[in-house]
Amino acid sequence: MLRNNLSDQAAKVYQPAAPFSEKHEKKPLVGKSIYSRRGDLVGYSVQLESNRSLSSRGVSGVVRNAETYIVLLNRIVTACARSALSSHTGGEVRGLGVESRVIMGLQPQALLIERFTSALTRATEEVKRQGFGFCVAFDASDLAFIRDFREFRQVLYTLGDHGVKLIMRNPVLTDPGSDNTLVVERAVSAVSITPEWLGIGASENSFDHSRYFEQVTRLSSLIHEEAKIVVLEGVQNEWQESFVSSLPIAYFSLRQSDDDVYV
Image (tube, rainbow, N blue to C red; front, side):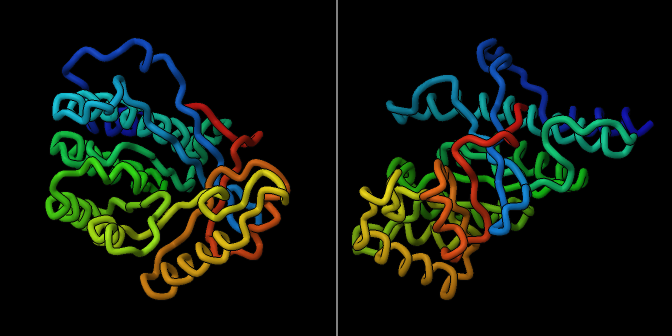
């Protein structure tokens, strides 16, 4: 009965009506491992790929990407259902571990497509019932292609009201030209940064001291004035990892880890 319930619930999230690229159906999604500051494995970050470039930024391109995202979103929900089933039946848990935090990265334009946001809301409710935390992440640089920031911000608040937690990657520095981005920033509950964003190169020789102190000041403002949770993504070596304990972050991920999974 439990197996049937989980399978049925996962299937209700969304069943794609349109044909979908076979390449994306078969290509595995990589779940990059996320750790607490103490080094405990707490979740995974999955970047959704699109079935065409958004370089044209046309509406048709965004819609097609939304269709792609819906199918890939359904794969994540199914993976969560399988892990929950294995946990309940005492079997070996493969893939996403129960009670993991799952961060799903995507292009922000897709959030303006009602069909996708409806599927996203249902998916969030489903994975939360199965014991997972669920977040959506988008890069601040992609906000340059959002035409109506008022509409986009309202969508973010609506998603938040439905339990969808939002993460902005690589937040911009405060300057007069970034007002729209800062408005969106206020609507998210967390930010994600990289070592490069901080000025931490691959070695001590490429460490940008001035950028580092400037960005750490920015982080302090995000945490203390805006109550943001901070995630450090893409740590690639021990030199970069040595900064984890001194930074005001909640979680971090490695560029490659033996704990990574495929969905």
